[in-house]
Picture 1 (cartoon, rainbow, N blue to C red):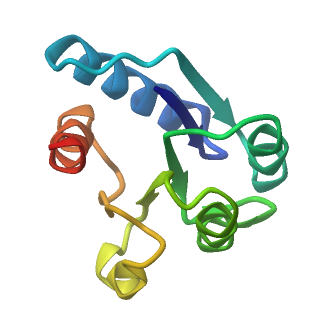
Picture 2 (picture 1 turned 180 degrees about the horizontal axis):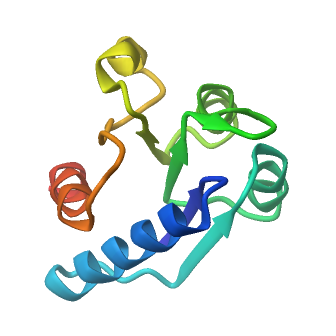
Picture 3 (picture 1 turned 90 degrees about the vertical axis):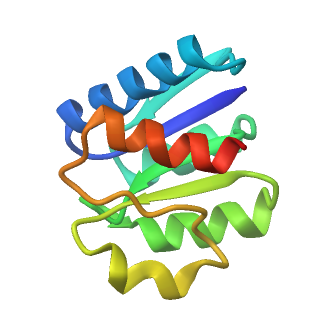
Length: 121
C-alpha cells in the first residue's frame, strides 16, 4: 500500500506515520510507501506522480484546504481512501462522499489506529 500524510505541522505528520507503522505491525497491512507533504501544493505534486491507497490530510493547510484536496483526489483517484484530520469532525461529516473517516485533532496514534482499523475491515 501507498500512503500520503498531508499536514503543515511536522509533529502531526510524524505521529500519523508512527500510527501507520503500528497498524502495519498489528495487522496484515504493509505500506510500501509512507510519503509526507507539508502543503496542498506539495500534495498535488506527489499525487501527480502516482496514486495512493490512502491520504490523511489536515483540513486547514497553509496554502489550501483539505476539503479541496479530497475533492481532487476523489475526482482523479476515486479508489483512494481519504481521512480528514480536524478539530471539528462534526462539521465535516456532511462530506462523507469525499472523506472516509474524521479523526479529531489533536489525535493520538491509538485513535488513528482505531479509525484505520475500522476502514480496513
